[in-house]
Image (cartoon, rainbow, N blue to C red; front, side, top):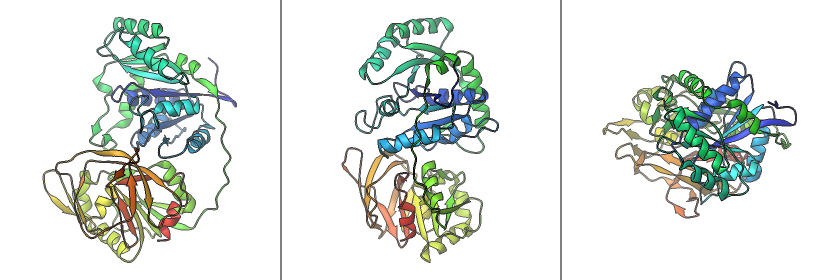
Length: 448
């Protein structure tokens, strides 16, 4: 097997015909297995998911080799930005592993913004994960269709998931070869490697032993998947890292909430924030005072799971309210907005007081999923259209006299009713914005 060098490295995408096929399980296992071999592994995630990237970071970090999961999203950013991110984060990696989103060709509009678009854009070979629990030779037309649909796509191999027995795999192996796709092995069904999930996705709580599960995944996959052949198929030219002009570091003091209740953060947003000054982390759950700050950022997360503890920490609620009422600059997304409201009502009907900065109430009663890409123009911001993603089960129960400062559209360019509220120097909404391509956005927030 040839090894990566100055001009080559391993790079591939793990994709699937549909969600629920086992992409994340197999991606985490491969990240850990490659890391065990001493490779510096760089994980990426197609789409706007901020949970998978955290698990990717953990799975790819072995010993002294630390990695950070990075989002690649061709709706929230341009092709040039996707290429720049991939080149920059891959330049020191021995292997770059990209996990797709949903089905291979599922995009914001048809295949636009899909995993297939990003794989073609970056010249990545694609390894399909096919759930074969109720399938045998029917895998042949399935794979043939995915291989033939777009001639620009390189469907290099397939891993069959949830396979019953070695004899079951022999039928699948023959089907793959007849479809012109190389079989790379299979993964037997096992409840021991199932990932615990919550209503917003994969479980990321501190009490859940993710390390043990990831190691179990790696051990399980290693027995029946041909890792050496996967590496041989995925050896390709190293992407060119585009040179960017370094920006002078700002002097802002930026307080960012990060704990079990608030942790939905795009890494590239943090990179942009860091250019504007110094980030100091704080915990609305555990801390009783705010750091000294010119700007506070409250990310999304799971405030509903920690609502009693958040509500009981009146010292922090009062500190945030005092900061905002005195004109402090504050930006809050989704769970952060819920925390700034008057009350948060739990599923069983208990209403708990929050920070009472915004005249609104949110509720988990009759929870329904709101999901989709968003494009918005914001009053006063002259840096161009902002893009992001909305993903929540909670609802606004009541909104008082709050001013909406944005016009919001969905991925199909249709009007979307999601408001972006401004109250004094506080801006809050349900939308998770990606400002990796809008490096002036934190500066604009601070200038409010």
